[in-house]
Image (cartoon, rainbow, N blue to C red; front, side, top):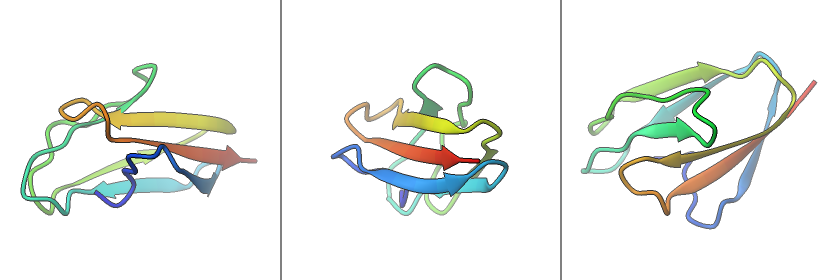
Length: 77
């Protein structure tokens, strides 16, 4: 999944931009915001999940199936 990084790397973004996660793996993934503000259903290969981030700050997320897969999005005004 392009937005997942095992190192917890961050990705820049702007408020109200739509973010899309695409599962490019052969195994399912389930995207979840750390505090539960959003969560996808299980994504099979080539399936997508989109979320619009409406607040500035750092959004941390992970795969609920593979919790070591994490990432951050730094949302700016």
